[in-house]
Image (cartoon, rainbow, N blue to C red):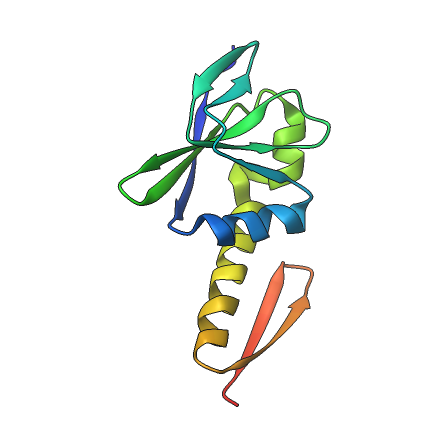
Length: 124
């Protein structure tokens, strides 16, 4: 049986989420009012299209924060964003950290490791 699951990620910046999506090859569709899941659709504020997937990720705006929901029954969702959204979570954190560091005038070196992404932030 298929159902909608919440991706446990605190999203406060839609542009940073978009940058994470671009890195994963996903498309953020701003203003989309519904997203597809198991032959149905559900309400949302925005949606994320996943290449090769029949379903989408819905983004619901609540009090300046964004809640992400999807149906993992479509295995292409999990392939694209990782188990429990792990890849999406990591890249959102990376992009948010890089933005904060740049605002303070720091330089950032990003390196891919076997465990994921490692950031080195240097005070200029």
